[in-house]
Image (cartoon, rainbow, N blue to C red; front, side):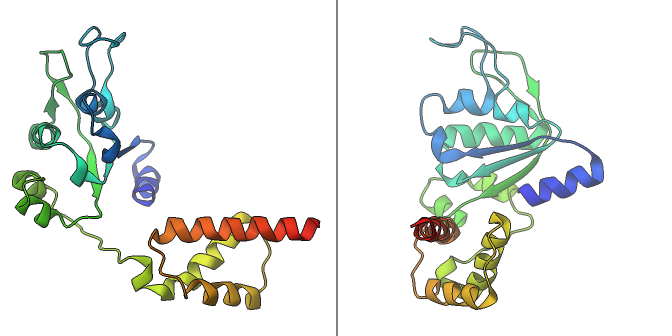
Amino acid sequence: AKLIHKERVIRTGDCPLVAVNCAHLRSELAHSKLFGHRKGAFTGANETTVGYIGEADGGILFLDEIHTLTLECQQDLLRVLNDGSYSRVGDTSEQYSRFQLIVASTKNLEDEVDQGRMLLDLVSRLVGTMIELKPLRERKEAIDDLVAVHFAKSGKVVGKGALKEIADSCKKFYWQGNIRMLLQALKVLAMNAELAGEE
């Protein structure tokens, strides 16, 4: 999503990128966070907000873990995708937002439809360019590049032999947490190496 946004900015100029982890929207305030609310709509609503949908107008909305979005939110999102219109919580006036939608999920969305957790109409609207990324444990050949890029970005000078040794060691693990887990392990490794050097 960040790469697509970067390319779009280069081609068309500045535009917003609004990234939302839908797993954090599983509460009574989910609708408010996604679609905004009118001042006084509920206790604690001290000001009118536009919500993530409104913030994304003219740009990109990235919905991570979309399968965790409530069915009610899915229905209203479908409406936005159909004609750009939506309503804020506690507001009867229509709002409009046009954006490019990018979604990510760790679940098979068709299976989620079968289980009644995703709306078929919404999943049908999401059909476009699909990128399926296998878990790191199933593409360990990528570890060499990931290790090299990590140390290059961190500014740490590591010889080719050491990089290969680190990558080979990393390939022995299962990496349940995928790339984030690998990068965290590399950070800890670099920190321990620095501490050892100080001693």
